Length: 267
Image 1: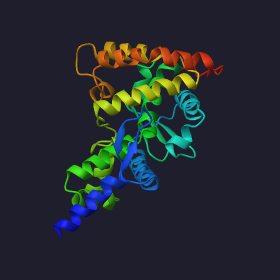
Image 2: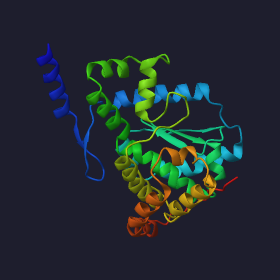
Image 3: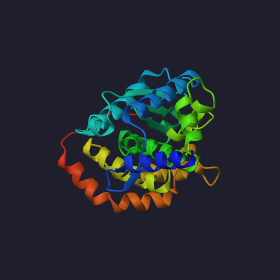
Image 4: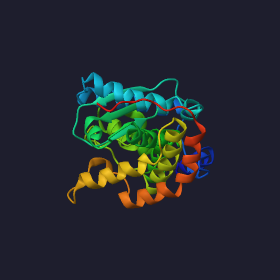
């Protein structure tokens, strides 16, 4: 029996080898359809347990930015998504997320820190970058590989009604056991999502320099106290700013190549 399990695990490792958009080797065991189903399940649970924002102005602003990002040529093919569902949640959390299958959630608390469309695009581009780079799949596969294989797989694939399996799925996708609290990806994944997101926002017509401004806002918002939810689940803001600046020349060139300039008005 042990040999059978080891053989299955070895087969999965060989079958799960993939390459990220930046050329990094990845381990991804799960197919796109399965990941999309998990994303749909998690998003439905979040919508069930978190109030949505009724403000027309907030929704129009967020949808304007999200639509510009997700309409970047080639993005939907990379993310294996036909259309994106965008929801604004009523919460003081300074955060946002994107899930496999085409789901974007933005908390109203973020709108108090992202002062314009360019800055919000930096966040949404980053979160969509996680999906494009298949980070939820990668994290779930890593957890499967390190948590005993069959036990973890049973938890992941058996979740459906908000029990342990459902929570395992949400955790691997980046949503914590307490719905709406986002969990960190690895630093490598975060840096990769920053790079992808910076280029996405630039190609959508948003000024990539606003990404640095956003993180400066984040730093001021924390005021030396407990960091915001977004900052607590990501690398330090100074490290992030340095990483963004190292890719800024390429992003600015992409920005200057596009004539599109989305007119997304902050409420």
